[in-house]
Image 1: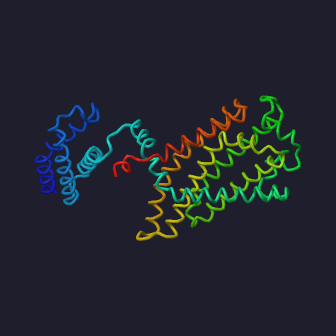
Image 2 (image 1 turned 120 degrees about the horizontal axis):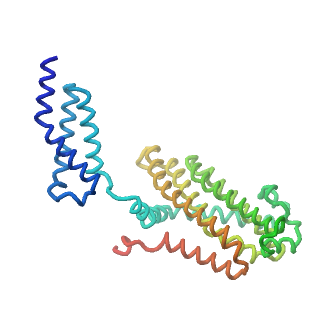
Image 3 (image 1 turned 90 degrees about the horizontal axis):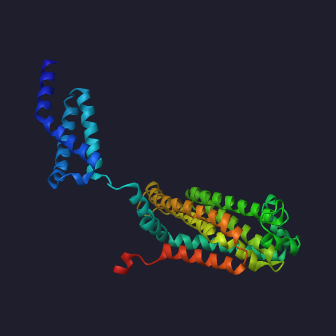
Length: 337
């Protein structure tokens, strides 16, 4: 025991100055910032870090006192994050997400985005045609609780009032459409989350959700088309629907990418392929939350305040151009090539 204590004391005496030096440099960097360190001190930290790791390895191998091992572990962890960690603040991370990470992730899913768009459009077209041909098909696509008067047998005056009736009348037609808009937003938000979460099931459940969402949209528009109100109905919906439906499509694309990776992992294992697709999909989904928030603002303010059809279409076109330019503008790397 005495020999072990002597060995521990000698080990500490020989190397403690380097540990304390590293600790003081880290304290200064954490307290005052990296810019306060001189270039020579910055170069010194990685050397001292490797020495601390070596000391930790020796301390563990010869079973020195536990307090010394704990101290060296904490010191090595601090130095590791200084040497290898990303030294940036939260605002820079957020800026990098919007400037680079999110658009790059969306562009990387362009094939899945096209497939998700095709699924939703196909379902909407089929449902629209079925309801136009046989109005009772409407109840197969739209939940009964949602219809509440906005159904194939409603009068033209009633439906027109829901689109352009006076705002703010309790119990009026406009209030009824407000309930519809809230339901659609909640429904689309849930579809977006589930479409991504169910991607692991070989794309099947994600595709089903996209089909269901598109069919409900097509059936809803068919009701207004039967009464000659398709133009104002599309304008009312797209004022926030461009952002909202695009968010659902991107969530579906992220889910499809995971399902495809699980089904066809290529050279990776299925777990690795799913993790790779999931990391990119998670970035897309973080942006989808932002898009749904923007859609909620458009639904809560612009849709209430803008009554003219041409203005609604102008806002819809502007949001489409905004998202399209943001996600699919030529990247700097592509321009350099």
